[in-house]
Image (cartoon, rainbow, N blue to C red; front, top):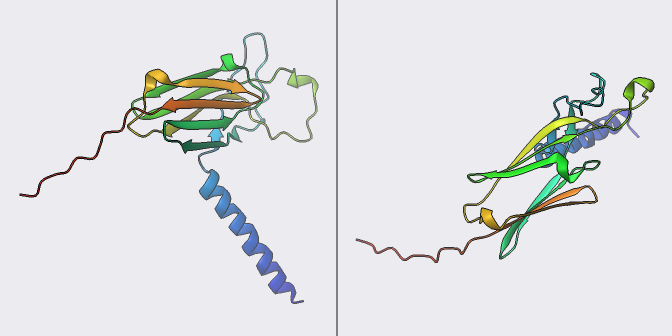
Length: 156
């Protein structure tokens, strides 16, 4: 086998993986801003400030569903609101341990305050929204309003 071909193929696969990650998950890359409970010390400044909060949205005949992976939080740590046609999910992911007593070899988890926004269709009934958090998954179910029937427009 030609070593240059092998390296070229490996490079192509690597770049394709990064392209897919960026195109499919760029919104999941979330900035975390430092913060902690008053009774805790803030996480070390060398902890990651960016983390992935993967989400999925889909639509049924009667609702729009948004699910987001946010492990390690309590439901009280979230602020979920709708502003116009934007669903805003804010929260604070906290670490419960004293980090000053540890020597980390790997730290990939981000802690702190975060915010994610999702654009909603116009036919959402904000008053019938349901929000739940279970097993590290935040679920928002937004009921649809009655869709307006199509209107035939006369030609002049």
